[in-house]
Length: 105
Image (cartoon, rainbow, N blue to C red; front, side):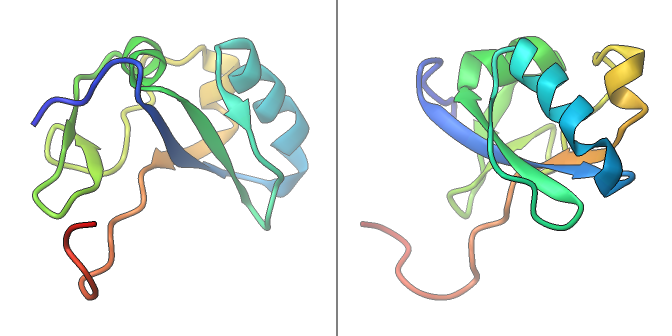
């Protein structure tokens, strides 16, 4: 199912090194993302669906379990990112919904 372009969503940016967090966060913020605090080797990035789709050059969809994904995977492709940013990231991924608990609200 398609997502509304203006709907806010969040993903995790996973760093190759925690030391690069300030540089990666600044670059993602410049691309339109709200960046959360670094925890270990990752931080959250939030933005409307349209920002994710534009920056990562993907079409996002709701997954069968209620999460967000692109092309059948939770991990976003990094190929469209600037080289300087891509070199700092291991992955940008959505969190899978739990396999337990309520399935609707």
